[in-house]
Length: 389
Image (cartoon, rainbow, N blue to C red; front, side, top):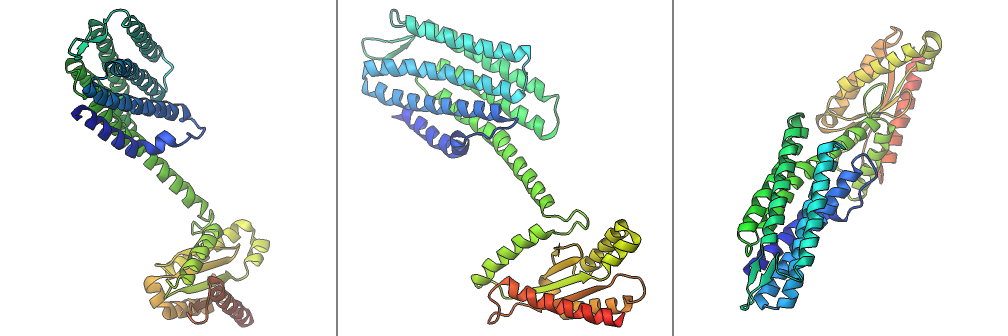
């Protein structure tokens, strides 16, 4: 029961930390072969755990015919984990080199040797057997193949650590983690060789897969998540002004609508701004001057509302969602902006019309109603500025 208890624990831990990789279909990209190889290795380890657990229960019950069959599966699953681990390492290294081919070829040689010796074991117990007391008796052939496996694990681990020295940063750390997993497998298969009735190889597999999961799989996933986040930020950023674009505005609008419907919004202020005479500048001075005019206008808005997100939702239209101290000081900020625009009339400096509105709980049932009031005020202000110019 002691022997099987660790295997059961290993199955649970293995399933918890690797469930996503084991059941997720790898997406077709440059790393597909690596992920498929790792997935196959994880399933081979799970197979080994199951066979190992059954062996403990059957051996304790002394059901020798079933123990004999399970022992055959045990040694087969053990060498399969070796072969698939080697294949994963070579795929991870992305090397179709002679050393990689030799490693994989050696893995197949050990696998075929294991099958031949286990077949011969039916006729003579050269690999393992059971005495009259139904006690397990290891044979000399077992030590031969286990020694070959130890050597291959060690050589592959050392080869990976040497390759790691050619990289820097996180890539080096990942390669070293792979190499260390091989060292762990080497140490625990040696212990398994010396103590056949203790679950050392299961411990080694669990430790090795935990190292790979933590320093390789999880780390790569985190890096991909950061890359996707960067791509998403670029997709939400206006290329000319570097503030948020209309796509970001529409998503923000949906989020605020949900919050309004759930009664989560207490304070919400919206400022809508429109640049005056942009078409005239584009027609008379060119689009490059027009772009510079838009950038200067955006700079004024961002400096005025320093604590609030700014969105460019059209060629000459901006929206500010007032937050924090900007919302608290909205009247003063809006008034100073308006005064600045009046001073800029007739001077050639930036002139923008702005309208502001606040969310009213009993009146507004969505973002659009607040936005439309601000937009209407902006157009009224635009008319006033044109008359004054």
